[in-house]
Structure formats: structure tokens, C-alpha cells
Image (cartoon, rainbow, N blue to C red; front, top):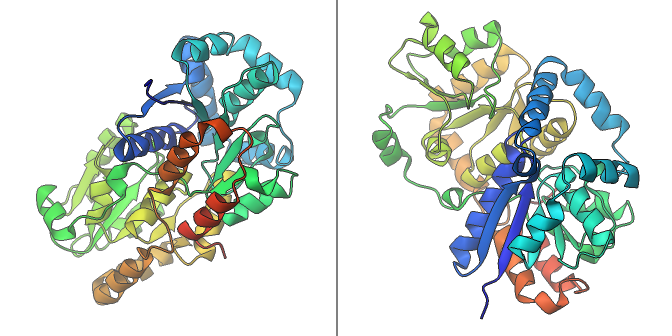
Length: 395
């Protein structure tokens, strides 16, 4: 019998979309190794020359003009990509998308970014028969995610489901699965053992993540972070920004035995387990990984738009706080020094199964894949009832 095939399409705008695709693929393979999964950043795959220029321009816009990004997000919030835009995307960037699909012959296509979702939706409108799932990788649902040809939406929370049903999408086409994380985040390891493995001191530890592009903090925040470095261990994980890493390593404030500076790391799961507090931008994937590990979060400089919505969600749940002044750092560092046991108990409670089951998205996809003959019109009531119970509780 031919093995089932799942094709996951993403784009490299930030690291979260592709990260979610790989996380889901690894989760599916962990639960059922017989299922073949392939992850492709479709624009980069089809246009390896043009795509990097577009991604570079987007990165610069996000870094230098975040208010513009937020304005575009809000003004287009309720709008799907129109037919003309889909046609233009296909003609300019995705001309050979159908050929890729026909060559790989997937039983299911999952898109973790709105652009490939729009392109595959157009192909389905023109006759493509492969079921299309759209995995929304944030705690909000911008209109660009919505396409009439989508077979099923996989979403983070019941709140996001309500947004979609409010736009006319049938309830049984939206399944609350949670955002998938890599199986490395499914279980928690010994904090003490990991600190020893990673060469860290056994003391209160703060992990500071600058995002996949290594976005960084102002001087006031850096002074506050390093003020208690004799008593609080700091781990900086700055992503792919090598110039920033070199600059930080030459900073006298960071030349201390209790400071570790990293670039890109494949051991974020271990770093989170070894740490007591995470300071980060509120990207959908990072937030969800931290949720799986039960680590409290401080959010710094949310990009206007989806990151603001992510921030709002976790703050309202009591799992995070906005880092809007140096006094917030001072407060949490005092807590780490004086109320360490209480914070650890709170962290244990955050891992309760009614909050989040990180394998749930992969389980749902495998169950739907097993109902291949019913994928296009299956009534999802039973699966939805299970999914709503298995993920976080929206406020």
C-alpha cells in the first residue's frame, strides 16, 4: 500500500511560519513514521533568485518601519486576498506550483502562511482535488488567511475559531488544535541536569531571545538586565544576527561568568527547560514553545499587528507581562532571588494538561488523514469537541 503523503507549504517571512510547518511534520512522523512529510518554502523553492530580495525588503521594513507594518495589518484586517491578487501571485512567483504538487502527489496539503494558501486555493478553484488545510500560526486571524477553497482551518484557540466563524466559515471546518511545536518541546527535562550539560551555573536563570532575526534591546534595558548579573544568570539567544552577537560579546557589561551569548541555537527546548524566565518578542511559535515548557514570559517590542494580538492573549491569560519599563525587569529579578520556590510552583501549574497538549495538532491531522475518503466533507463535530478540550482555555 502506498504511504500517505503530507505536503507543507510555508514562506520565510519571519521564522515562525516555517518553524510551525517543520514542527508539525516532525510531530506527524513521531506519531506515525509511515507518513511521508515534505516542507517547502514555496516562493523560495520556485524563485530562488527573487525570493531572498523580497524577504530582505520585508525584514528591513519590519525593523525600521514597524508602524507601517501595523497600519497595513489593521487596514487589511477583514479582507481576504482577492482573485486578482491571487492571479498576480501565481503569475509572478508561483507559476510552477501545480507542477510541484503533481510531482509530489500529496494526499493532503497544509499551508502555514497566507501566500501559499492563496495560491493553492486558486489551484483548487481551477480543479485541484487535494484537500487543503490552513494552519494559522498566531493567536489572531487576519483576513488574508481566509479562502473559500480551504477544506479545514487548524487554529490556536477557540477565540480564533470565533473570529473565523464570524466571517462566515462553517464551524465544522475550523478545528482548535493549538499551534504545533517540535516534539523536543513535548516533554520537560531536568533543569539541574540541563544546566550541567550546557555548562551553566545552578542559579536563577533568564533566557533572552531576540527573535529569528536577532532584534535587540535599548541601552536602558541592557543596563537593567546586567545590573544583577552576580545573582541572575543571563542567556542571550540572538538568532541569525551574527553582527549583533559579535557586538554583544565585545560589550564590557556582558563579559561576565554568568552571561552566555549565543547566535542561532537548535537547543532552544533545552535552554527553556534550564531557565526560569523568558524575555522575548511575542512571536506565535516562541510563545507556544514557552507555553509547552511552562516558562513565564516578558514581552518586548511587539511588532504592530499579529504580535500585538499574541501579546494580548498571553497577558490576559496571566502567562506573560509586557516589558514596558526597566522596573518590570527589577520586579521579576527580585522575585527570582527571593521567591524562587513560589515561582517554580506556578511554573508546574502552567504545565497542567488542560492548558495545552503540544502533540494535539499532529494527532488531529493524522486522524483526518485516516479519513481520506471523507476529508472534503467530513463533519468535524466529534473532532472539534475533542480539540476544544485539549488546548488552552481562552479568557
